[in-house]
Length: 153
Image 1 (tube, rainbow, N blue to C red):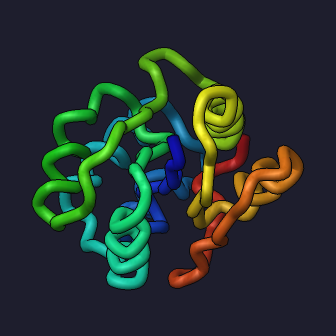
Image 2 (cartoon, rainbow, N blue to C red):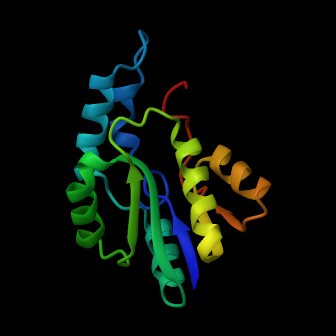
């Protein structure tokens, strides 16, 4: 089965309004991340990302792949529906998993590639794009908003 894998934050959801919650001079704590992800309900959609996802969904099954934690699944599913994004499988970071999002995503991409033909991966993080390309997977770097690393690993 042919799929497209699409990221959320920075790709279809504009998270810039909440970046200040994890950009602290003293470092980012677990509580900073909790507030950061809770604020995702207020993300405006990114028009270029929404159009891209809708266009790709016309001919492919969609898999949403995000570093968002599992605890905000309901919030995320509601956000996707409220902004008329295509239905699809939603893969989220398991609770307690403290790996960098790009590491989690690479593992998920490898699992998906073992059972599906991945036609395209759309992500705003250049590190995710580089990892996918190193696996010889097709990518589209979502560059419709300036990318900024969320926090040091």
